Image (tube, rainbow, N blue to C red; front, top):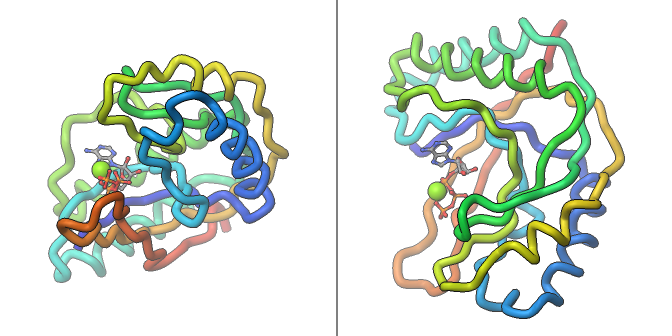
Length: 187
Ligand code: ATP
Ligand code: MG
């Protein structure tokens, strides 16, 4: 199954961002983008890809430990940007240092559980809002997000999320995400 570890923002933080995104959708060309839905919004900590079911118990054990080793921390959704002209994302402010360490631990734990992990890349927390396969420039969308500052919350858990791939041939269909397990930070 296709799995990743993530931080799932609470409903009020999602609602604030949804209001902001509604404004972005008024910008010229917005309807050419593939927008992600608020239901699935998340900050990926580590992406595991296809994980054999036999590996799941040990992966869960390692992620529980990774969560345990880091304290709850403050986060808010804020600012935003683009990856080239392919992705529009919202950013994160707050205790990014703890977030990065938690991401590193999740990655290291998965590797120890036997999940083949891609080369380590600098962690860049982001919440994907839209994807672009056209020649539309995304600068106005990134600029539209630059003043956004959501209300902070205390991140209290790490989630293991399953990604169900979109059904082939259905235009505009998106993966469906399912939270498999969560573990409290600290404690
Ligand atoms: P789609 O692939 O259909 O565009 P998606 O990227 O949201 O949708 P997944 O590919 O299942 O769905 O990815 C789940 C999460 O993991 C997303 O946040 C995605 O950005 C992230 N992710 C996917 N592949 C990688 C990767 N190789 N490295 C880091 N993060 C990844
Ligand atoms: Mg993907």
